[in-house]
Image 1 (cartoon, rainbow, N blue to C red):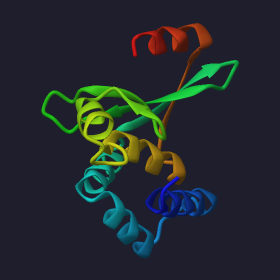
Image 2 (image 1 turned 180 degrees about the vertical axis):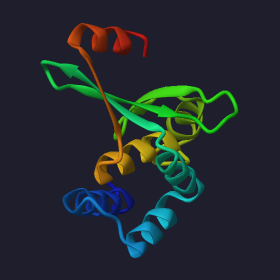
Image 3 (image 1 turned 30 degrees about the vertical axis):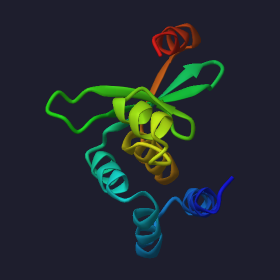
Length: 132
């Protein structure tokens, strides 16, 4: 784990434990993630993050609304994966970013308790995951 990731993880853990974010923390996150973080905060402000949880397992995935006029929805795991083009191009292929705006929005919304919560059966969740 590189130092940038370690700083980000420490911040996320602090935000999660307090369910709030300070201006200083916002500044550091913006420094680490740049425009992607700005865009992520807009998505969270517009209530664009839904956590879909399977029952009875409690497993979950995030559904995050994009910013384009189409308002596409992307399935993502906040720390590991997003189905958007930017994830594959900027993160996987070029290694230029740590994560995309949808992952950041999911992480921020989850940390602040700002997700729209959705419940589905484990079978329905498995069907969603099979489309990834």
